[in-house]
Structure formats: structure tokens, C-alpha cells
Length: 143
Image (cartoon, rainbow, N blue to C red):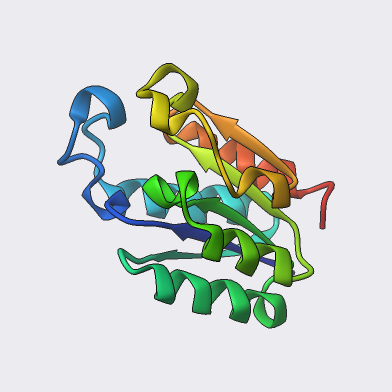
């Protein structure tokens, strides 16, 4: 069975609590359970990992090369400025799909640019929790 990692960055543990107009009211825990169930329904074993610490995310990316066949990443605000995350993703030989619940291109100007997009297979944004399901689906042909 293919194993996939769903990597969530800073503040994504607060989904359902923060900025409900942007992220909705469904909790992070509920969405994570739905992602794992969706992956299982599609023949994958999924692990969801969330951290508010850039170094922890980098360590998980490095480990992903040995533990997973592909990954979905929502790096949160780190998407827009973390060259360290970009370099970590570039250093592993598994496909990464970048996802965002909100449409980052319709939000504040600083959110319009992703420094990790060039090292990911693609980017999905603006479909709420369904962005994760689309990301898992996109991995199918990449793994």
C-alpha cells in the first residue's frame, strides 16, 4: 500500500477557530480524520503531521524520503518565505503537491507568491478542505 504524508504548517491546528470566514468552522481534527479516510478509500495509508515549528517540518520532509511515496503540503505562511522548506522539499525524491484551503491569490499581496511551488509537482488552492482531497488525488499519477 502506498504511504502518503500530509504535512501541515504553522497555525493550521487552529482551523475552525481562527478566521472562520476564510477557513470555515470545521475543526482541524475533523478535517485531518476526513483526509485519512479519503486516502484510505483511495488505497493509501496517510499520516497527517502538523507543526508550528519550521525545523520540525524540515525534519519530517527529510524523513519522508524513506517513509512515504508522496506528500501533500500546506505550509501555511511559510509557503511565502521559507527557502529552508523549499530546499528541504527539493532534497527529497518523492512528489510533493502544495495545497491551500483558501485562494492565496485572492488574499493579501504577500500570499500571492509561493517559494515552494517551483519544487512541488503542482499547486491546488481555494477549495477549502477539498484542496487536500484534490492533492491526494493528484498524487495518484505522480507516485
